[in-house]
Length: 450
Image 1 (cartoon, rainbow, N blue to C red):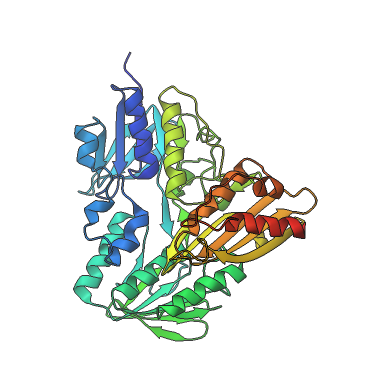
Image 2 (cartoon, helix red, strand yellow; image 1 turned 90 degrees about the vertical axis):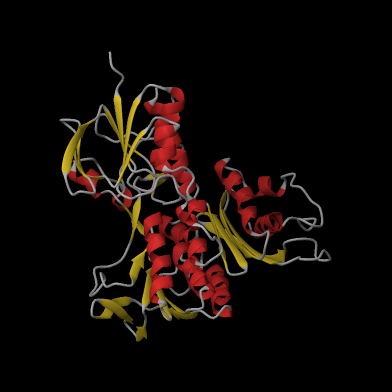
């Protein structure tokens, strides 16, 4: 009997992690990967650094090319092939190739790994030349080529999320005049406003013009090219616009096929990455997951999560048994000279849940104060009143600050209390930390507040 055929829609983190896992377990399995762009298995997170000139060659962002997957792993990868329809009953997908020809391919098992897309409201002239969203390697290359060929002078970033802030810094590096429009009180709304304020100031320090508490209304264009960004308070001249308003799951294909969606219209899957439709699986930035602190459905688009979910899907598709237990909401970024990190729940989420909580915020040094290179670090931590259960933390500081969030992420995953965190046997030496690590200093203060 012939081996079942697996078709994978999407050739980046989740899709190729699954394909590689299946191939390692089953060398003869028929695997078809359909990718609508030219690229597979790349680091989308590296695009701002490529655009900003910190990385010279775009090939540095590609982990494995389609040719490597075809020649070394015997995986049938077809680039410039976009899946336009899924027929779950007939178990077939309809594909449009780069010749605009539509063909149909059968599957026994289907993995949807269609990722996410940049969000932008449907406003006037959103399709003007010079307005870019970043989600694929191809989109990053287009931005870099636009800067090189068109030599824009004024850039406006709309939205103060991770990509928006990293792109603001990248464009400053390219000597553009950069403005950033953000509808919230401070940038980076995944932080509490008091912590986001530190990031806002870091952007001002490198010359970014911030326009906070302003809403995008429209884009102004001339001859098809963007000329300005119109907010509810002003008009900002621009010959380059970056959309940094977050992403949405690419779930329309699944929805059209009758596959159930969940939170934020992400594809609903179980812990094994199965959808509610027989023989169809999903993984990566297009799916919903579980928040381990709240126990509720949650949506997050991160390469770390996508790779892990792809591995879980690939394990199960190749006859093994694996689960994805969920996330605690951990993320890090570097903006200018400061490092930013967060995990768990922020205050607005706790208020929405009606939680009874306590916070503590401390300022410390990243190393022993007398050691060269010691920088400032601010740590904010939250816990449940009464039980002392750790609920989350946020960190903003100089070099060496951000990765400390992994201590808290581990504690959250283990369901530890603040007292447990204080008792952890963390390492110490002057080049790395004060005697009391800032995370434990924050935990001690939080314990006092409890």
